[in-house]
Length: 299
Image (cartoon, rainbow, N blue to C red; front, side, top):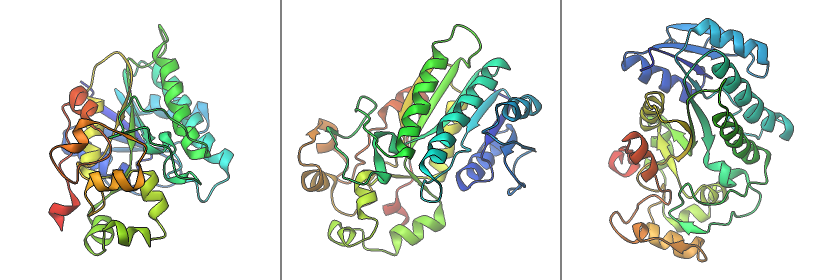
């Protein structure tokens, strides 16, 4: 079991939640980030430019980590040129995996995204073959952010095939939009979430292309910890989502109106009428993880 976990991008909103959760679980944590420190939870802070292979190697070595959580990538592509967005996703991941492998770090968890399927940054509506979406669904991104997420997963596949010089356990976590209590209150509780109202929102295209998925930061951090504690061999991709959609319209109606050509699997027609359009059963099988936070309960 890991005793020290290095978290890249610990200055970010999600990184801060992950550091706090790991600390509360008894881990020693090290925040590997560029620039000045912007959190108070990590036990140590190491400055590193994650696009510089030497700095990543030195930072991971200095942290004396048993596991690395790689969150330090550009979170959205709207403020950077496409090549910078792609570079951030792909090259930082390569550097982290290479440094971890050379330094004998057994476990790495990577922040992939629902954008690997295309997602919210696609200019056109994404094609959905079946619902709920699981890990077998094809990936068809055309935007730099989504292509970068798909490429980082391919890089992880390659490292997992190495006989030596690679982490033993690599997990790509396909995160949706991660909300904390304040964001959830602003987005869900104080707004009309019916499909009719969402159609009038400037964010409707993004929400449709991300399958109305989201996850609370507490559930996301819990899954990160379980990925740190995992011990399987190789690389696994895992979809992440809250147990429900972000819409007030029943999921079957969302599917019928917005994804009419998608095959419906049995799990969409049974149980919770607002069940997520993303299947997280692999995360349950692999990590014994189930999301618990629902905006409807909070409302």
